[in-house]
Image (cartoon, rainbow, N blue to C red; front, top):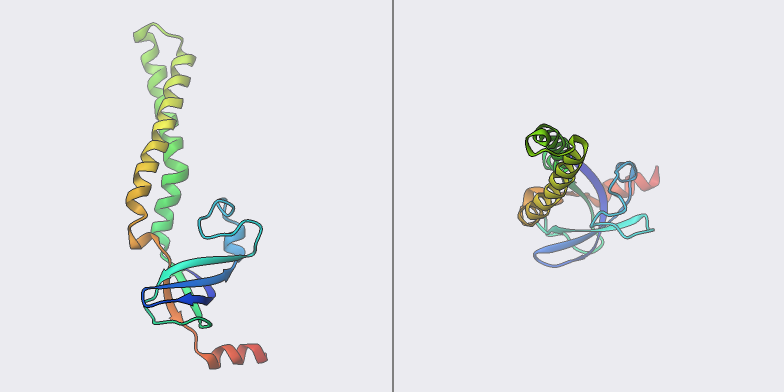
Length: 154
């Protein structure tokens, strides 16, 4: 599980808005500038989570996201389109003599077409995954005041 510390900036019975500071995990991410939780040019991010721990504004919390869904999303966004590009190029190369076409041109056309089709599949899948709670951050725990104050003294 990937976790991050944050401070609740706003909350109601169902939702909490948690302000976090971009960490080393965010800095190494290739999608850091297009992430839906970031504010461009700022080190702070606001993440919306379900308020399962009855947190209030000012509470220090730990939010998390499961690793398995993140690996699946990474595969879907980065590996799947490249695989379809390669498969399309190989199929185009194989079919070119049958349709009396230049092998390179057929491989390029079918490769690009399948690459574009991969992004259409990802776009369709995005609508399904965005409603799934497994792909959203959640509250892990609320930090106690004494633990926070103890760290500040050190």
